[in-house]
Amino acid sequence: MPSSEATRDPPTEVPDLVVGIDFGMTGTAAAFAFPVDQKISVLRDWPGSHLAQDKVPSIIAYQENNPSSWGFDVNTQEMPKAPGIKSFFKGVFDEKDLLQANQETGLNITIDEVETWLTDYLRQLYGHIKNSLEGRLPKWEAARIRFLFSYPTTWSEETVQRFKNVIQQAGFGRSDGPSSGPHEIEVTLNEAEAAMAYSFAESKLPNAGDHLMIADIGGGTSDVSIFQVKGYEDMSPKLFLQAAGQGMNTGSTKIDEGFETTLRKQLRSLPQLNLGGADSAMIETAIELRTWKMVQDPAFLNAKCKYGNKPSGPLIKPFFYVPVPQLDTSFSDQRLEVENGRMRFYRDKLFKPLFDDQCRKIWDLFESQIEKCFSPSESSLDKIKLHVILAGGMGSSKYVQDFLGERFRERYATVPQFAVAGEPQLAVCKGLVHDALKEINQGGIFRYSAQAWYGIAKNNSFQSVEWFLRKDEELSLSASRDVKRLLDMDDKGKMGLQVVKTTEDVQVGWISNKSKQLGRDPTVVESLTDKLPLNKLKGLRFLKSKCQVTVKVRLGRGAMRFEMTQGKETVGNPLI
Image (cartoon, rainbow, N blue to C red; front, side):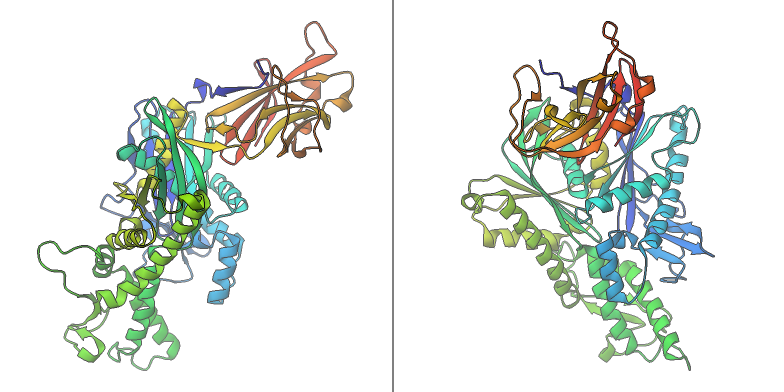
């Protein structure tokens, strides 16, 4: 038997509570479950709203540089885009997006400011989650709680790590008492993967060998991934990543921005706004206020959501009205498309170019992923069974579904089966929790290929590396490895351990995972030397000059967690 083995996480690590959080551009949703009963629920009792709401607005307000309100409690009707109100900060959390936004707007927002806004917002979110759920646990501080967050595929690895740091600073991942149990943070599933996990909980299961393209088309970002169903274990699918998540900054907020541009132009042509002798700055402020209120008006939001729907019952009129704030209801002007204080908009004239622009970008994502996933001989899809699953607010749009379906019919010999997540706006947060429950009980549904060989070397000697992960090995997130290494206690200089990797072919023995030689030295990924408390290590019972250390490796999506033990005792601090 090889000395490094794949093992399932021990039962003691099963959390008492799992919380999945979908932090979105315009709104944030949270789902939760207690693994003992497997039921997934959604938080809907958000402060500031007397109605049950699926999402709380991703917005926070400040007074004198201190957070004063958040979510539904922020009075956007009175202060739409005042300096003290911060929103859409997800869209500028990645440094390249922030740079582009500053160039386009002429602002000079710093990454530190964005991190502060997000930290303050998430701190309020954590406080509400705790207040809502702590009564369902014997003791919040002592409970084992796993907080799961998703992220857009447009973010770099560095941005994802910064996001995790901000989450921790906001209060997630730590508990309040000195004798408390661990509160864990996981930022492992991107938004497309989380939506995919949800789709398996809600829809008919595909056949082994089928391919699944999941598209999470939200408010500000769209993410697309392709998986193949390799088979089933205990009625749970094994999804193997075929085309890694790819995304871009597209979504329903771009429709809102287009409407804002149209509104500003038309509002400037209205002389009846009762601005008196106001200067140009005051006029622009008044126009911005009215623009903001009209974008939030239910008449516009309803028309946007239903655009593309087939008429049922009374025919849908080709136009809709949005009231103009502070405009007399007796005022009408057909030249300005105003009737009784309401501005008239023709659906196709307004929405079609805006939707088409976003749909074309989403289609480009689809084609890019298909080209990466399938060979030229497969690119017609005539021999491929492909399912397309749409999630996110814009993913539920009938216009988007019809546009993409028509493009498939024009481009490919076989049109894939389309499905829409049952609750598209909750697919990500519920999917995070569903995936975690599957991982706890069945090893998870996602499978990945290791991109390199990984091993543990001693004292920078690469001639006898103990390899614990083989290149192209199929992995699930619940897998872990135990690697035993014998150290010479007589020579402190030879007690170093290093995590190394190589993409070369490695020849290992049948009994041992040790390699005798390599064509070139592997790359040192991380040194474990400074994590070894040399004064606490104990020699072997019959060989005092030697000690054996077990390096426990927990495999994660894009990350590894290392812990060293002697017997049942943990030595040193965990390394992530």
